[in-house]
Image (cartoon, rainbow, N blue to C red; front, side, top):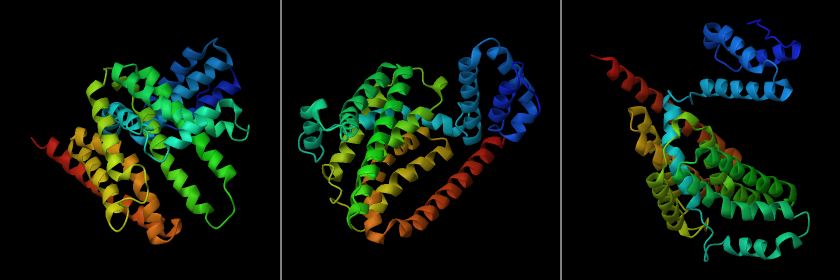
Length: 319
C-alpha cells in the first residue's frame, strides 16, 4: 500500500504505520477507503488531530488483529464480562480484618507528610481502595465513558505500585518472594482494568446494575473464601491449580456460544490467578519451572477452544 494522504510526508508515514497494524487481507480490500477517510478527517486538524485520528485507526486495527471487534466472539465476550469485571474489582474492598487494611489506614493518616520517595506508592494504594468503587458505580449507571477512564486509572495506579515495588525491592534472599507476592496481588487490578478497556465501546450502552452486583458479590465471596486475603490459606496441593482451571473451563463455554458463564469465568479469573500463581510458583520451585507448565496449559486450552469453536460453526452452517 503506497497511498500517501494529503498533508505531506509525515501524514503519509503515520498512515502507512497505522495500516501495517491491520490484517493483510483487510488492507487489500479496504486500504484505499481507510486512506481516503483518514485524509478527509485529518484535513486542517493539525498535528494533534492527526495523531488522535491515527490512534483511533490503530486501535481498530489492533482489535481486528486480536478478534476484539463488536462482531467477533472475543469482543462480545469482553462486553458481556465488562460489568462483571467492574463488580469484581469493587469486591476487593479494603475492609477491617484483612491484611491490607492497616497499610491503607496508615497511608490515609500520613497523607502528604510521607517521604517523597513513598508518596507515589501511598497515593496509588489509596487510589486502588477508592477508584474501583467509583468504577462499579459508573458501570451500574451505564456511564461507560467514565468506566473506561476509571479502568485506565486503575491500570495506571496498579502499574505505579508495581513499578515502585520493582524500584524499592531489596537484594536479599527473600526479595523475589516478596516481589512476586506484591505483583500477584496487583494482578486483579491490572488484568480486570485492561479487559474493561479492551471491551468494544459500541456494545457497552446499557446500565449494568445486576451484572455489577453479581460481580461484586462474587468477588467478595471468592476473596473471602480464599481466606481474607491471606495467600497461605487453602493454597496447598491441588487447590491453586483447581482455582485456575475452574474459571478457564468456564471461559471455554464461549466457544459454544454461552457467553454468560464464560463472562463469569473471565471476571473471576484475575482473582483466582492472584490466589494461585504465587502458591504454584512456590510449590514447583521457581518461575522458570512454572513457565513451561503455564505455556502447556494455555496451549491446551487454546486448542480446545478452537476445536469447540470450529465444531460450533460447523453445526451452525448445517441446514
